[in-house]
Structure formats: C-alpha cells, structure tokens
Length: 297
Image (cartoon, rainbow, N blue to C red; front, side):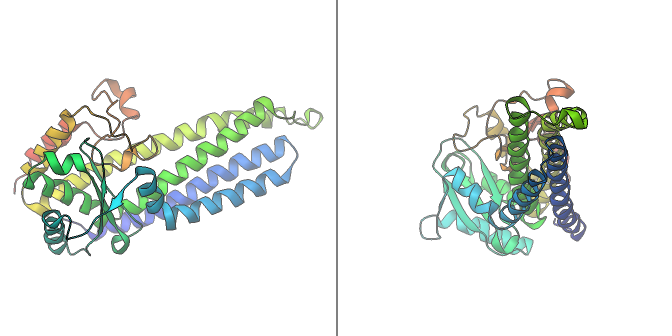
C-alpha cells in the first residue's frame, strides 16, 4: 500500500539530496580554488554541478535506459505482461507505465522515471521466461511501489549525482597529485591537504549514503508490493529464484546496480560482517524473504 507519508518524505528527500550533493561539489570547488588561488575553479564546479542536477532530474531515466540497452515493447508483443501491469496499476491507483525489455538471460527488473506519469518498468528476458505469473506479479508490484512512493525519482537523481561527485573528485585528486603547485607563500598547503582529503572521502561518503538509503527503500517496496497483490509468497518465491541465480546482468554497472529488483552484479556476500554490508546495493535476500513470509494478509 502506497501512503502519502512515504510519498511526501521521498519528494522532500529528492530536494534535500540535490542540495546536499551541490554543497559537496561546491565545497570541493571552493577548497581547490583557494588552494590554487583561482576563483574560476569554484565557478566551474558550481556550473558543472548545477547542469548535472538539471540533467539528473529531467533525463536520468533516459540515461539509465540507454546505459542498460533497454528496448520499449507494446501490448501486441507482450499481452500477458501488459495485463499483469494494467491490473496492478488499477489496484494501486497508478497510471500505466511504459514497459521496456533488456535482452539478457539474467533475472532482474527495475523502475525509473521522475514521477508516476513518466514512469518506466524494465524487465530482462530472463525474468519473464523463468518466473511464473504469480512471481512476475510480485516483482511488478514491488517496482510499482517504487513508482508510487517516488523512489524512482530519488534513485535516478542519486545515480547521476553520485557519478558527478566521483568525477569531480577524481579531477581534483589528479590535479593535486599531478597538476601545478599551489601558492605555498600564501599558506595554501593546508587547503591543498583539505582538498586532497575531500577528494578521497566525498565519493565514498556519497556512495555509502546512496546504498544505505537504497536498502531501506527495498524493504518498503517489498512490503508495499505484497500489500498490493495480497500474496506475499509470490514476491518471496521470486526473490528465492532470483537470489539463487548467480548469472550477472551484463547491462548493469555499479552506478545503476541499486535501481534493480535484486543485486545484478552477483558479487555481493550477504551477511559477511557489518563492513561488507555497507557496500551492498540491496538488503540480504534471505532477510527480505523472511519479512515477506512473516506478513499476515
């Protein structure tokens, strides 16, 4: 069940996360502009980050689909899948999303778009071929919950902005190691050291924030999806099959992995210490299955 409280929180979180990432990038630009006594560095960082924020808001879904090699399908080519999606959108009070397919035998799916009116759900051919109808309904309800809760906007924005922070930090890191020397006579050595530390830490912190929030949203989408179908076992069974499939999804990468129904890279070691868990794109599958099977419908 999609609640207005969750929708409101995610809309506010989207605004906050853009503001937070802009602050990080501006801080990097300011420190390095002081270290090199060059105000143009700050202006460039602000301009680049602002452009990235606009692109992430309006075009992140198209970027994600292009990276994934997804192709749009229609009712005529996949009538059974369309019927499943239409029935669930009616039950959830959501508009019909566009539907895309990735030609890959790995089992996975994701949703993207900046709002429910512009939403997209994408499936791999593997998930459609190897799951039964109830399991596909469970996966679809999970992805529609991401749509209704506005997770899709948040996750798409974060994907682009984390990449932007990483790119700018890498530029500054290379500049501090191989570029021109800072003005030592104006005591800018400390600024250079601070900038060097920020360039190393900011992409790590940004990625950890991205992954921590993503894991929380997966639990919420599981619960909302199960309430939408009134059959938690369908989603739990799909999770069992998908988590047991060790084939990585070739179209996925580290930047987009957190958007998928389950970790598409298949290189996670669930439950191997708290430190390893920090870098997981998804909660442990067994924990998600356990929570679903404890739900009373």
